[in-house]
Length: 168
Image (tube, rainbow, N blue to C red; front, side):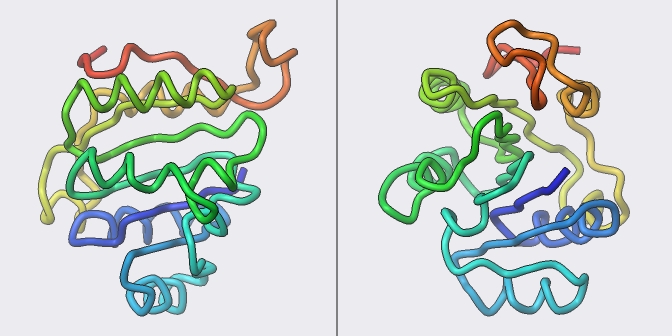
């Protein structure tokens, strides 16, 4: 499994560093120097664009300040949708708004991609200590199992989560 992580702010940086300890990781940030610095620190690959970051990734994690910023990354020749591969799963850790999360989920679903609305709680201290909380964390772990859906013919990983709702 390969992972792409987009958004390396105060919470995203330590989250991405923890992911890099377990999985091959590509990182992207609006400030390219920040992505390069994290990549050098943890042995990840820095990407110049969201498209490049998600190319070949099974799991794509976003951790941005707002849902509007996540939506803005989707489109254009260098956007997420231009680079996502078959069966990819987008896990959005942004503390965004439910309407935007549902809209993003609908767009991704129509194109055959998965989406998990997984906002995190715990702030920078939680991110640094690895103790962030997300209602979707258990679902994310389950999503790495082989897909049993006829829609995907048993290949890849998939999960369905009602976006914008906390689901235990």
